[in-house]
Length: 287
Length: 287
Image (cartoon, rainbow over all chains, first blue to last red; front, top):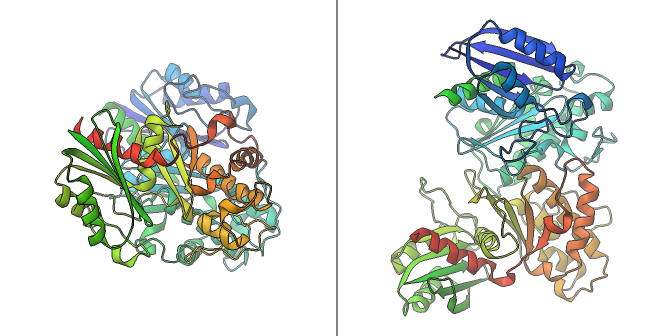
């Protein structure tokens, strides 16, 4: 028997099949188009394999409460074709196996806890900074949910005086983390892609301040053991040391933090965090 | 057999004894002085009663992890006589009954869930705005803890352009909620006590904005069913409608909120929330 994982992103889907020891034996990647086209490709990929369960991490917002009608649905997304689509239900019907259903950031957080930078911890916040900003929150080994999953990317930040950018969030403009500090915000502010901007550009001090603000607030709300950063923007490796320094200044001794080099860390599994977590979660379903 | 509750505040201690049906039959209140003096008064108050358990909500920060050495201790408080004092241990020895140990805001949150404005919900954030700003967070009926309890009062807020106050937080000045919006911040800004300031004073629009920012961030992190406001500053009853209005503007449709009049509400039990919660938690220990 084999296990499956699906990273259902707003831009692309990535699927993997592993053996029972979670060794990946096949993967596929394709752009996110319509739900119908996407499902056909998923089914075609998994068809040769006898799966015992599949772990799915989806872009969102998604319904996460099994007691409500929108469980498994993609909710109020700007991608209109996917709005209110019952992705979990469609996958369950198409693949006919147990489905572990959570957010894309949660499966990455889980992967990091099981096999990446979060090993040994059970209280983790995984932050991805890419097209958007999202957080997967694990508390005492379990995903944190209230009546919805967290949306930390849309919490409010203090705009820096040195920053004249008008913000890129369609809901909160320059008021929230995503509008100030996600990849598109950097690109629009600097008129070039984040990955093309040199490591000494002043934009990174601004960016690090915003991400340190997020870390400050996460520390004083979720109180994790470690904050793990992933996502495309974090390929700029000068960011993590800058964030640590600014976080220490902001917290200013109010709570005792672990050593900052252990507390604010880059992703351990790179782009494999999500698939890895998805496979572990699939395995959890059959244990 | 009877139940006990202790609200251990930085300014005053309040204790109560109830019968098995949680009907309060005796209470006492005294100023917080030294640990030794305070314990003598607590023991004297409870001495006539045969208690089966006591629920304690303490000022903090406090150690909340039973696996660590500082469990039950008061940690890095500015009240030096109490720093590192093992309040839970001292109470357990002095009263010789099971002690439910958590924060002052958590027992109030629990009281509100069981018998106040949070009845029928199991995902609650209780915010007190008084000498400080604190939050009790209940998720799926249980207190939220990471490796520490939350410290929402020290999360960062956006300072309003109309606000020239330099902030009252000794750690974060005008950067955090407590420094901008707790009772001392209002008093220092307006040079009069919050309760003396008229309902139409422009300071309340500023205050409501800060509290609405907190609600915005709480909504997108903890995702509760209801946010309940208590504490002395909230006696200014014009605040709640202002907060609701500003919260709606800030969230701007990004997530669907319950009806705001159900979502942002005043405390139901007034000053009794803490003692009520303490008694319910004591009862929980013996059930």
